[in-house]
Length: 283
Image (cartoon, rainbow, N blue to C red; front, top):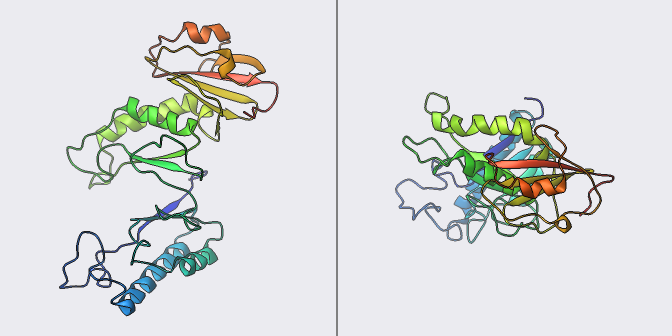
């Protein structure tokens, strides 16, 4: 699909591999069934196995933008893969590949991935929050799903903090999506079709705002989101100076700054304003 980046997910521990869980041994938890320091030759074979799989994935299946390596206990303590060799070789196939060795830090974690949460303070490195629509990442019958309002608030909050967001959901055994997932994704798509200008390709605004207000910027334009039910007013000094024009994003109706605080009691989950400046918003 045009404009859609493609990533490959890979779990560094492979519980089906006899080089990770040796047949007849009793693994403790999700770790290797043996200590790699005690069996270095076996671990070297497993390291080669992972290397060869990742080289195959990046060589045989078209262009990839992201290699997303899960399960961060591998590459901590004794379970050390030769990541420098692996990354060097996969980038021979995909020179511009982003590699995410999750929760490890260092040069092979190109961006960080807080899971099931939104950080209180934005990470200093590029980041994305990973949030499942339900309690589980894959499909589970009778799973407990979040509401559309919860998901939309997460999207707005993460983007306003300068992050990206992954929304996780799995198909049913027949390959279709559950009605619960569609009940979130369809209205989210409709909302983004109207308000996506304030979400896509934007950057955070370096300005403390009252609770319930979120802001993004793009070029000479600032986008302001007000959350339903939050009644703290916005002050003009909360925003970068030099406002030229304020409009409702959905209708392009011109409004005054005073109107922002007169219409705090609205039915929409977010009231979204487009604020134009004479020059690029730098704050």
